Image (cartoon, rainbow, N blue to C red; front, side, top):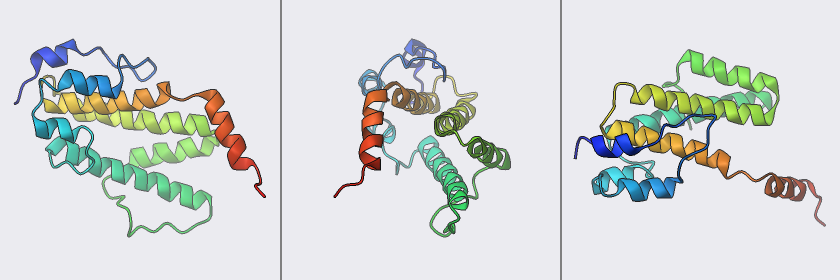
Length: 168
């Protein structure tokens, strides 16, 4: 494949504070006629070998490692650096993660972590207007927005209540 002018032009703008215009499954259905099999699979395969997918997977692992390192320190536990990579993450991102955790507000922390990921995807897609990188980054940003749309306060309260109850 190569250029996806018509498909990319048909995609609504994504805003981190906005509602997702479709589900990730709907996106895949819309994208299927435009993408090759390998490109379509790479949208959901964390081990995909396509350049943008591999770049995202490496950055995301590094991001998760940085978060795990901060969480371990807050819990007074040792971080096992040999298990996770932190060498891809830039200092500003690490500092941003640290600042989020200083707030002590779980919802603010989660929103902030997702905003960091959303912003990184914006950076990765900069200058890629009608190619697979634009499609891939759009999909990953859509997944982030969809996760927030699917959160249910009542279900969350039930899970919290169940997890805090002492079972005999």
